[in-house]
Length: 179
Image 1 (cartoon, helix red, strand yellow):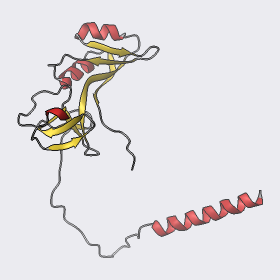
Image 2 (tube, rainbow, N blue to C red; image 1 turned 90 degrees about the vertical axis):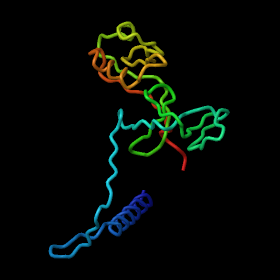
Image 3 (cartoon, rainbow, N blue to C red; image 1 turned 30 degrees about the vertical axis):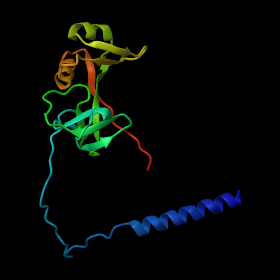
Image 4 (cartoon, rainbow, N blue to C red; image 1 turned 30 degrees about the horizontal axis):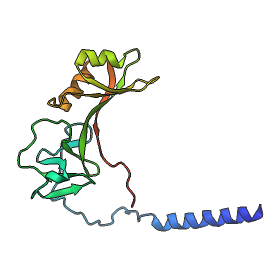
């Protein structure tokens, strides 16, 4: 017991010393401070959620790349520069996460949190969507729009229907990665 207390005390003293050394110096009144000018502010407006649509990029199978410049590649798919910009957001549209800067494709699905008492079938029939999955005993469901539909417009229509609490376009990004 005494050994545990000694080890814990030593750890606390070591941690306090490390925190004290890492504490930044405070500016005192009257002290001159170097001021740096900001030369450029990059501001990007999100198209949906925290994502910006990269209309000049495409998510294609590696076998179809040809001489296009590969930006990033997974096992069988790659994000490449496209010669024709995308007009609508649908499956495999490339988006950029504005917080991390990572590129990822859109899955084509819309994840929905239904309001109490609303069934997934009711939303499906009212908006003409395909129900991918409805999780039993929850208000969660996943829908798919037609291939030529703009997912941003579909998600806005779902939100304005009054049948859902939330609707999000599904992005196939890596949330965690090994260092």
